[in-house]
Image 1: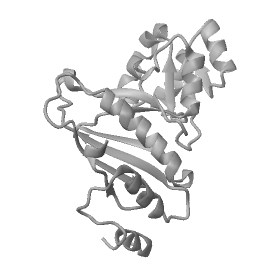
Image 2 (image 1 turned 45 degrees about the vertical axis):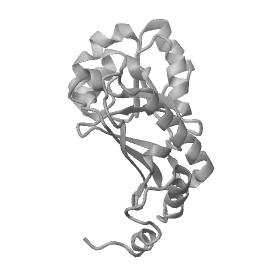
Image 3 (image 1 turned 180 degrees about the vertical axis):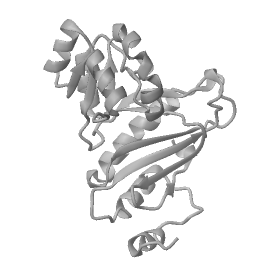
Image 4 (image 1 turned 90 degrees about the horizontal axis):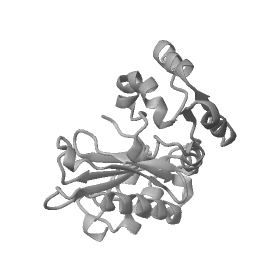
Length: 229
């Protein structure tokens, strides 16, 4: 596959086999973000756990201090006073069975985060097969199944992200935009890595952080020295 000139120039700045200190890696990723749009900086962490075992799952949520740089659209499933609270808190969409029907019949996905009150989980249960694979199904661990819908909406809008293992035991998360600059990206990086380290399962044995890579949307990956985290 032929690579563009900008990508080729960026690769020259990175030593492929080197493990960089976090601050140096972040500075390099920002430096190699050369696309005409504001690239997203992503963190990819491979963990020494086995996601097939329930006691080795790593999942949670964290509010990034500087947000993700993305406007988050919230969908809230709630009734009565909780629905009113959600609307007042700035939810983009609030509903009940009507929104379940819209998703199932119209394949509607104009939202980024789904929040639900506990009493609504029975109603939206059939959305599991649709929302689950997209990582959108509300979950108590992520704080998206709650009676305090206003707080959940505010945190989502402020830059709360969910992290979870994929089938290959890797966590993929955005930690900001290239325009943030190295300092803000570093603060977000530290917040997410701190949460992942804190979430280490008791059943995990041996090296927990197997590898850690940072990359911008169109840029090359930069390997981070896991022992410095």
